[in-house]
Image (cartoon, rainbow over all chains, first blue to last red; front, top):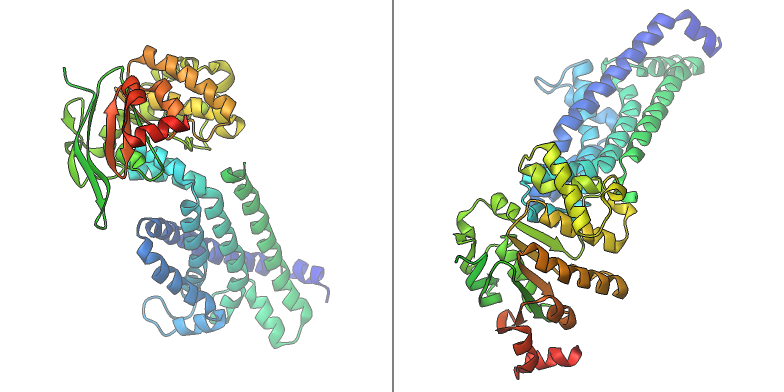
Length: 212
Length: 241
């Protein structure tokens, strides 16, 4: 059975899984931005916290994703079978690139620009909102891009704990040794990763102030 | 009359070492005190103690009679123009937004800011129509520093602090800007503290010269007194001129 005829016959199911996949990635990346950007900003204000926080975030990166999903299942509130557990794991993975790039985007702002801003009487909030975040935006966006692309891939494994998404086809295909089925899940996931990479890459270059 | 800036017994101690020690001077409207000195003599530190980018560990600074320690730090700084060697223009702001920064922080009406920006660009020798929409990366080093001076003057502060503003420019542009700045000083009537290690620049621009040596003010007087002084550090600087 060819891939195209598979899609033609199962279009409803395919669209449903793509929808689930986008949902997993969007919710988890969104949550990682909401948590990670303020955390990255905080690290620029409390340099002593940088080592511990980035260290912990790093540890999550080193845990194999299948194992992380497994570890989370028995936990109360965030655990169990389904999308919620998968989203928690995806957030943990996405945090490191976002926190690290937020920190580096802001720390990379020209010290003379910061001194001029402070010397002219900007408050710390004004400096952050008008100078540091806009100038660091390109670097922060690069972190979001990495997080998103990684999430698209990792979310396929979320099917193993019943979270749905395109991984459903991949796992099913592996179980019955059917290449078409594996491809039916892998191809849209790859296209999704490429699209996210491309779109966020364009946005990133638009905001790369320091390159000018 | 209350002087624009009064510094009494100013000191800054860091880990048991005095970077600035017992520095006192007064600067009135229309006067420019040039702080001369070698690298590490405490000139820049003294400047930063005035606008509280560093907090003094001893002594007293008064701006227009008010103790700076008693003022909210952002309000204090908006009343003091600040120009640094690296200029520090915001790369994502146009020239207009850069110059209008402090007026915008102080919530001036937009039309008044726009008019003020044009007035200031003309004052520092930049054609407003050509430059308001440009970004810092589209300017030469000399043009950037002109914008930096315009930005420092934007909210019409009575006091201006300048930290080697022309130090990073090529020699020809530097001389050009020094001459124009000398003319500007007379017109705007501000109190200024101007840090430099270039004695010729200091003698051209200063109404008073303060010579710093190892954190202390080793000499304070007029440019003529400086030229005639037999203080060995003054003579070392004169020999370099």
